[in-house]
Amino acid sequence: MTLIVFSFCALLTTLLIGQRFGATWAGGEGVIKNLDVVIAEIQGSLKIIHDAKTKVVTTNDVLTRGEVIQTGDDGYVRFMIGQHITVGMAERTTLTLKNITSDNLRILVTHGRIVVEQTGSTPLHIQTNFTDTTLESGAITLVNYDFLETVMIAPYPMATASVETSLGSTPLTSALNIHETPEVTIEPVSTTLTFPFYDWYQQ
Image 1 (cartoon, rainbow, N blue to C red):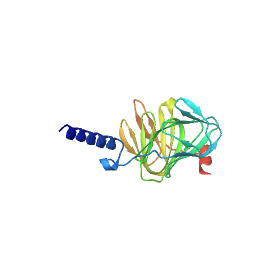
Image 2 (image 1 turned 120 degrees about the vertical axis):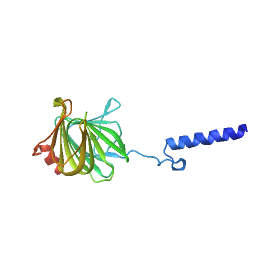
Image 3 (image 1 turned 180 degrees about the horizontal axis):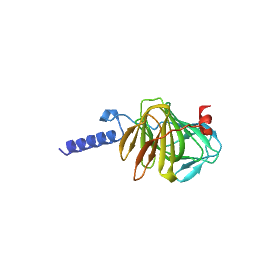
Image 4 (image 1 turned 30 degrees about the vertical axis):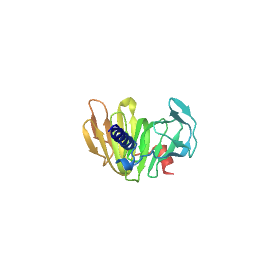
C-alpha cells in the first residue's frame, strides 16, 4: 500500500511539474519561448539598460525581455520583434520590452515617439502609463508627452487597432489625443507627421 501511495504521489508531482513548464504530455501547450528582438539599424546615441546596468549594442545584437531601450538627443533605432513586428524609435524616447513571447507581446513607452508595424497574427500591446493600444495589423505611430500626461496615437497610415483607457475601448480609425489622467479625455487631432524621424524610418 505504501508503495502504491508513493508511486501515485510521484506521478502526480511529475504531471504538475510538466504542466507548470508547458509539457504537452502533461496537458500543457508546449514550451513558450521568447521571440528574438534584433536591432536592425542604429543612428546616433543609444543606451540599453539591463538589470540596472548599461550595455553597449550594435546592429544585429539580440535584446531580451525586461531591457530598457533609450535613444539620445540624436538617436534613432529600428528593431524587430520576431519576424512580423518592426519598431522604430525617435530621439529622446524610452521603451521597455515587457513581454516578448509568441502569445504575449507587450512594450511600454515611457516617453517619446515610436512607429510600430505589425504583419503577424499575434496582437501587440503598446502601453503607456495609463493606456493600452492593441495593434492587430497595420502600423501606428505613438507619441507619449509624459510631462503633459498626454498621448497621441495615429494610424500610420492604416491599422486595425484599439486603445484602452479608463473610459473603455476606443477603435483607432484616425489620430487621437488622449489626456491620460483625470479628467481623462479623448479627442480627434490632426497630425502631419513631418518630423525628420519619419523620413528616416521610411528610408
